[in-house]
Image (cartoon, one colour):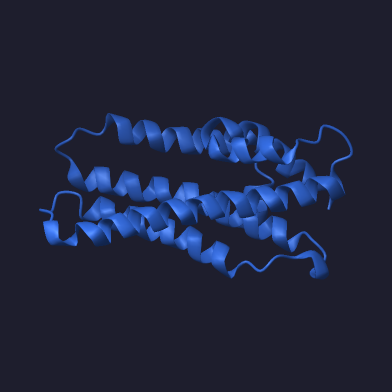
Length: 167
């Protein structure tokens, strides 16, 4: 499965992601089950792509250069679980005494998302130094492209394909 994702053409990944966003956008507001399903699907695609690309880039390095990936994996699954649970509990009344917990969850979600993007960006930069001879991107631009996922995927996925075709 991971080989299929890292060797996919950029437009294929883009169309899958854009298709789910479009599907989410055209669902009527009164269809809570479809809205929740589309949210969960979007989270699985978004965080799953990062998980597969990050793990594949890490495994592509020699043993002595590989980074520990436990926190990265937890960050990806935390994002999937938090988005899924919030999509399912969207219409429940909020207990105001739990606001502090909600804020802590949102802050930890932001930190884990940032770490997920950082980890993948670092691994991409290391792999690009080893496998791409020309057209290298600097680390800051790679990080920005990962943050701007929907458009960055068009640039990054083609380069990820090159990395894995040469390794």
